[in-house]
Amino acid sequence: MGLGRSAAVSALAMTDRPELRALLDAERASTEAQIASLTRTFDDVVESIEDVGNDDEHDPDGSTIAFERAQVIALLQQARANLAALDAAIERLASGRYGVCEVCGRDIPIERLEALPTTQRCVACVEVRRSRPW
Ligand SMILES: [Zn+2]
Image (cartoon, helix red, strand yellow):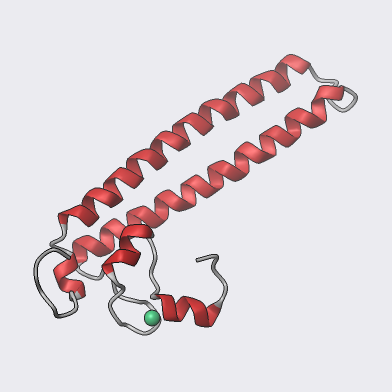
């Protein structure tokens, strides 16, 4: 992109793309911030459970707090999985394996990587599997 080359960008060339590394780093930083904020929220929820006391089985707020807690846990799990995926992508980028479809071995277009930096499949292979929302 913007280099005036007509040939497809090879996966190896992607390791030299600082914008992809910057994108992954930025995503990673915001995911870490999200985890920190969710952890604080989780602590608050746990605290409010303690405030409610030991009779939470019969407290009308008990189930609401339990629901809230389950939601925060789900969000935390999601954010942690995202962080792990970003770490793996950064590792692939560093070792020159980034941007190659894990199914067919073809290069994943740069536009797709910019939109979904942790993806490991090209559009064609995702469509075959139909197991992912993208
Ligand atoms: Zn593929």
